[in-house]
Image (cartoon, rainbow, N blue to C red; front, side, top):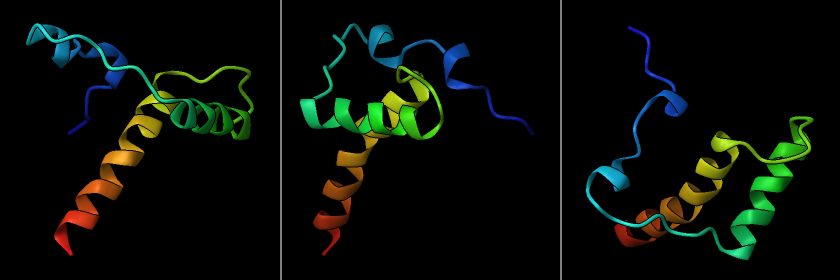
Length: 65
């Protein structure tokens, strides 16, 4: 069963009527670094999603302790 890629899905925040959140400077740098490692000049959606989720993962793991 194949998953739908994120660029073919609608934005869930837009569907709920919420505004998009901006990436912090650190997260933009992380997305740019990820794109450079993959040989791209600019970060794509996947790089940005990974950078945005990186802070959430650390918050969730620290909450569980």
